[in-house]
Image (tube, rainbow, N blue to C red; front, side, top):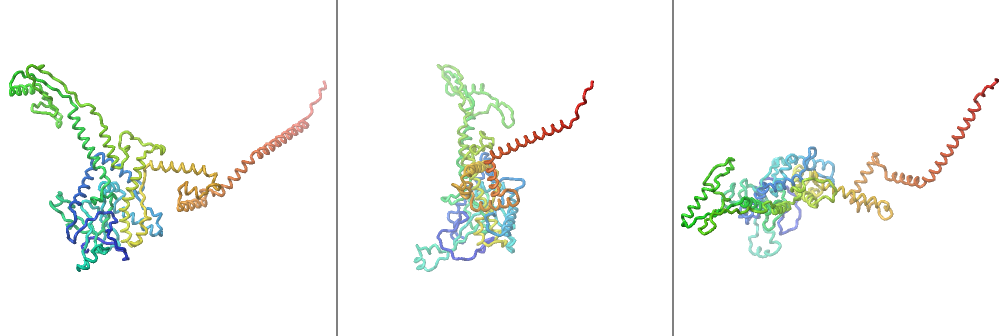
Amino acid sequence: MSQLFGFQINRKEGQKGQSPVPPNADEAIAVAAGGYYGTYVDTDNQARNEFEMIRRYRDMALHPEVDSAVDEVVNEFIVSDAHDTPVEVNLDGLDAGMSIKRKIRDEFEYIKRLLNFDNRAHEIVRSWYIDGRLYYHKVIDLDNPKKGITELRYIDPMKIKKVRQKIDNKPKDSLARAAMKGTALEYEYGTFVDYYLYNPKGFYKGGVLGPVGDMSLSQGVKMAVDSITFCPSGLQDLNKRMTLGFLHKAIKSLNQLRMIEDSLVIYRLSRAPERRIFYIDVGNLPKVKAEQYLRDVMSRYRNKLVYDANTGEMRDDKKHMSMLEDFWLPRREGGRGTEITTLPGGQNLGELKDVEYFKKKLYNSLNLPPSRLTDDNKGFNLGKTTEVLRDELKFTKFIGRLRKRFAEMFQDMLKTQLILKGVITPEDWDDMKEHIQYDFLFDNHFNELKEIEMMNQRMMTVTQMDPFVGKYFSTEYIRKNILGQTNKDMREIDKQMRSDIDTGLAIDPVEVNVLDNMQQTNQALAPEIQAMQADDAAERQELAADKAAEREIKKAKSAPKPAPNNK
């Protein structure tokens, strides 16, 4: 396929088993082609439906409720921080040298700069979430592919289509074809080539941008599969062979909400005011004259003041007829004469239970907790996990699945960049890709509260089990089954604890045990020690008293005797 515009990442040739199932690892729905420029099977229907789906998703995103829900999801998906990037590559589980890890981190930062992801992350994720798919063209220098990706260009999903074309090379001998028919070798007839077809006018019929009539998929630029980064939503409609978006479930709910709101407005406008019924006595007048007399009375007594909403003025317009017009009915002679009756307006006009029901149904279809957008719970409670709603935990898991799916875009771009730069080979990537993870910033406080509460419960359990360590439980059992530490975690934690002990940041547990034993021994001997200390104190007091008495005696003996009185 020399007509392919782009590049191909080739692997080493190896023996592979034959399978009649076409490869479709990227989850893209390939459109089959009959020949090199053949007629595509059901092309018009598929292309038109996919185009209409994407256009419907984008129209839905303009609705206030859907827009708020999408913003809530994207804001939870992308956490903007003044100092940290929204996403970083995690290579802790990768068994490779430090130089390889450093190159992988550098190339990932380069890809983020090409996407301007730190500044445009919100727009990129929002477009992917609404459309349900994301396409990027990886532009390289074909003369010097070792430079890697030079530019990443966004492609409108309406303008690109994946095609799986079969090049027929069946044997010409009819006997050979008849002998192979019905066997496994029948599936080996022909060579399949996958490529993307780009048409700037879009793939649909009778559109504004496209021609009126059938649009063949052969009208476009063929682009190699490896030159396109395709990130789908992961939602597939196998019956219609289409990739769905996350807003697809909300189509019916949104239409129902729109209809109920429109009907509610019409009902209130028509039933809110009170109407009057005028029974006009026409006597024995003929029908024609009775109708003329009724029109004269109507023009005489009808309210002719009209409010102009454009200018805000009240004007007199006799020709104005409102849908809220009063009723004028003729009454023949012998009746009760002219009479005016008032019809009451609509009742229970303030009931909005049906609107709230469909709004809640819409939020549920968008995987959004209804408490986030309702007026009942505007506050944010940082309490215990028992106060956290189950919907919030479900929403947190939903955001985690979205991040895993969106990370496939980085995975494909990083793969292409590393292979083109010669850092790794395609075979090495198959071994490394499962150990390359992407960490997004996370600020869901409900999840943090859950983790803290679970850790507190685990530490309480460990404290209660500590006296039985060495008797009924081992330290390894507690670390694995209570604290949930894996073998890798235990090795890493032991390494960190030894480092803390060597640097003096922590005390050796052996020394702590020795000190605990000494403390326990001192506590056991505390009564005897206290008695000995009391005896020593009494002896010291007696000795001090004896010395004080001796000093008084010596002082008395050394004092001069008084002179005798000779008088």
